Length: 355
Image (tube, rainbow, N blue to C red; front, side, top):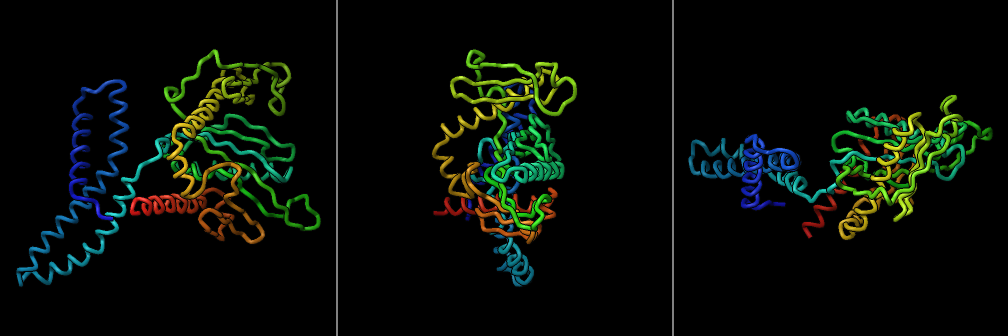
């Protein structure tokens, strides 16, 4: 996909303007924040655009040298190499210029719930949570639990965590859906393979300015926490339940001993859920386009199977099977699946633009 020279000029001019504004020292407050965001978004595009422009200019220069008998052989050799490299550079530029999900740079709220399969589903939900924790550590991200409902046999009935770092939502957004596991449970004496499932939802976490919540629209209840946590569980009304009345969205948090901190965490989750509802409502056409790429991200959609007896993981959306289950479930190996999903999404969006 060849990008017109005029477009390269526009990118270079816009980037130079932003650099000058950032260096001027005259930006303050919201203007500085916005300029910083624009700069961070445009910088990778401008870098690849500069590489494409330099390659084209060098090709033009070498083509002129072909008329010189003494320089022709050297020029032809360099031209061959440059002409081979240019299409890939132009492809990378086209990818960099693709419209981005406005939430890609945001942190994310990760929600994992045990599905069908009873105790085994809860154990699998715990495995998934640890997989994402370790993958996040590899990326240099921070994972902070917001709410946990532990299962009596281990694992979780439900766990919600806040994941912060660079490009969190962009990398994790395709993880939303039903994850299925096939394995022999430890409690299975007959050696039969059981199939269980857990649902994963990855929601972009908005800034407070992205979601305006009227205090009058909230019903806030306090109650005594249940489950593990020590003596305070039965003596302190620290657990929080917040109901957003207009949407009937209910969020609970009971993990911390502080009612204030539990309320803060519950509001984090509420903002994320309301933000996602707003995105779905206002970005209808864009959301439909995303669904056509590598899946809707709907938690009712089966997206992946982890088959322990065969040591394989299959992502059903892109038809990719990797016989690397131990590495993937351990965390670091998940990157290969994540990268494949992103690449498939980019390829399909490029094809759409070409059409």
